[in-house]
Amino acid sequence: MGEKQLTDQRLAEMAQELYGLPLEEFVAARTAAAKSADREMATIIRRLPKPSAAAWAVNMFARYDPDSVRQLSELGQSMRAAQDSLDAVAMRELGQERRRLLSEVMNTVRTAAEQRGRKISDAVATEVEETLRAATADSGAAAAVRSGQLLKVLSSDGVDQVDLDGAVAVPQVLTDTLQNETRNDGKDRRRPTPAATTDAGQRSEKRGTKNRAQESAERKKKQADGRADKPRLQAVQPMRRPALPSALEKALASLAEAEAVTRSAAEDAAAAESRLEEVEADLGRLAERSRRLREELKNLDRELDRVRRERETAAIEAQQTSRAADKGRRTEELARQRVLRLRDTQN
Image (cartoon, rainbow, N blue to C red; front, side, top):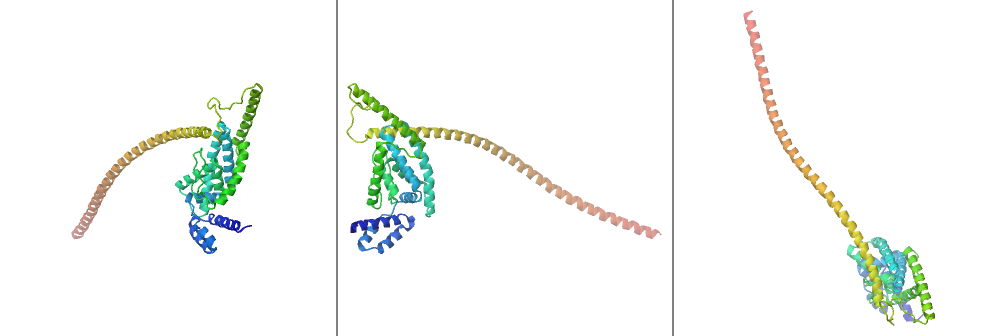
């Protein structure tokens, strides 16, 4: 192994260790690693960028649950295969599967981050989900996520390739991973093989096989009749483009997925609107009940004040009558004593 290969290997190992640390420890660990390395390696290590909070969370997820990362990658391969074959039904089903999987994965992302001592905010969670969505749209983005050395947020418009410039710490790691991803993705493009974990992908494969068989039979029949083979989309695009997957074709498949998302969002909005009406009705009933209770409480307060005043009056009257009774008893006692004295005098 040459000196450069040894340097690259040491750098890859060092980066793998650094980008697996808690985000707050990255700078100190990078400084310590540079101090312990030779001059050339130290210069390279000092240049390793600190990842964004969202990229760090993705790196933690890639290390914490590689199986889920693999599922996202396989789902992305199935979606690209369905997109290339213009299978709108499969795209809708796989789009729904992606939404379900991303929802589950985000919980895992939060768990992985919390185990490294950091809670991710809603804004960071949105960027993480955007990055993972890009990983299902582009094999290069999937390779960047799987590398565990992501530096920035990735995004995809569903048509163009994801911008991977400066996406990972060590470009060679991305290159190696991307080569494997590209080989696997190429196989999927020649023969769509959806993710084994999704029923939607399996149905997509069956439909794709059936469509190709029908197209092959139609082409053979036309050739036998002496007619030229025509593309399936002749009605809307009579000339074949010599380029690789057409931007229009990808846009049409993305449109089909967007329409499915819109329908799902409309259904959710209708359900939310219905729920809002129920809550507003409950709120109205409770507000009316609260008004009645407040009015009743006011009446009770007034009655309580009246009774308190009556109690005070009764207490004064009771005190006065008690004093009068005491005075009467004293007067009676004096009269009795006088009678006794008079009787004694007469005797």
